Image (cartoon, rainbow, N blue to C red; front, top):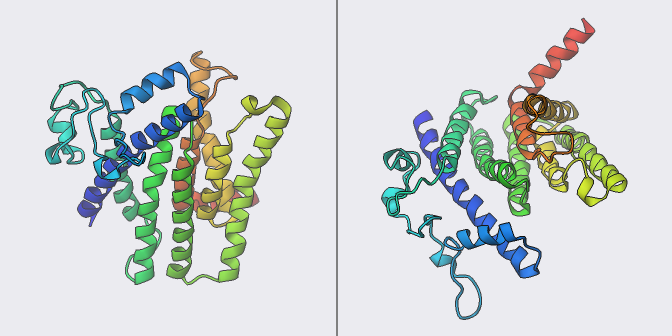
Amino acid sequence: MYVILAVFGAGMGSFAGAQVWRIRAWHLASLQASGDISATQKRELQRLSKIRPPKSKSGKAKLSDDRSKCLNCGYQLQALDLVPIFSWLFLRGKCRSCHKFIGWFEFIIEVSLALAFVLSAVFWPLPIETVWQWAYFVAWCAMLVPLAILFAYDAKWSILPDIATLFFTILAVLVSIFGLLASGGNFQDWILGISGGVLVLSGVYAAIYYYSRYKNGEEGTWVGFGDVKLSVGLGILAGSFSSGFMTLFLANLLGLLVILPAMLRGKINRNSHIPFGPFLILGGVLSFFIGKQIFYWYTGLYIG
């Protein structure tokens, strides 16, 4: 089962990596159409134009011509170039045609999702035997794909694309519903639980966003509105006030552990813009598996 999950995870990682570049190409194209594009973004769009499908006579892009290509020379990748992980290792991360290094991004996202699928099965909180338990687990693995896209996109460009956030939120709802059915929980408790999770996560970030926008303007907000939208799905996934709080705590703790050393070394300062989506995502995933244990341990320690 672990081998199968690793293979599927690597394949979904390859898919997620390709979608990151496609979303970026479409995003830049929309900025160009609106006239709100910088010179740097124009150069990036020109490079990404190799993977954008050409337009037909009607003016619409032909999705049938949307194929994975080398961003350096435009070489259309063949079947042997698209085997997750192994193609990158065999070609040593280089294009078969122009022999230029394509980067670590594709390899990292493929390995990461392969590990995420396997580790999800290892630490899964329920047996995987009944139909609903299988649906719960499959929906979770499917949800990891848009989460990987959001993680990578925000880390690279400090933006959480709405299309990926929407798919994540829909799948988070399915994960929550299947989790209720798999565990035989109470519907009323489920509604109250996800309401509490959304309130503590999205509510806190919405308050921070609107207050900082009121105080400093749109360019001076302390969090992006994309983080507010992402927190809705994470709140649904948390499923309770305590798990939502734990997601909030873990996300900020991880952010502190990464940002504080960089500040001490002078790499960033208090006015630097740091993408917070990856920390939210990691906090949400960790909270799903170990959030309740940490919460009960801490409250038990506090009560004595």
